[in-house]
Length: 198
Image (tube, rainbow, N blue to C red; front, side, top):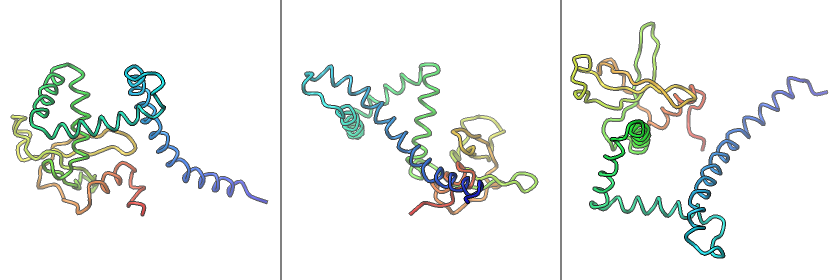
């Protein structure tokens, strides 16, 4: 006879196996569905009705992303994009959302290639240590003695998008010899996931 504890263990084992792939597939299909819904409706207006096939919206979105990336390599287009971005940064609320999203994605994608990006440990009183990421070393733009000799360190919160940016004296930080992706995974999963699978 199978005990209740064994049933629970098997259920949890199955849940752990299925939940990550289910969440990944859900997010993937949600993004694909959103792309198909938005660009597909545009394609249906532009193309004759008999030419449209399901999936053309996804294809169009992928082509658009590639073309935009290609065009931004040209100085003229890059200049126009910068002007458009300046207009966005003048609109209240929109500039906050756009700026935060853009900077965060740039931070994750560019890593060391875009200014100082370093994994560090900071120890508070009572030997409590947090893992964080140096995001900015030059804080002179703050124009205040409070930032003198300090760097900006981002401490993410586990299992959610959020965290704290703290100005910390540089000499109180301990550099950690670990890739940013591994450190981010460690912090965001509360230390449960230690390394890449495979």
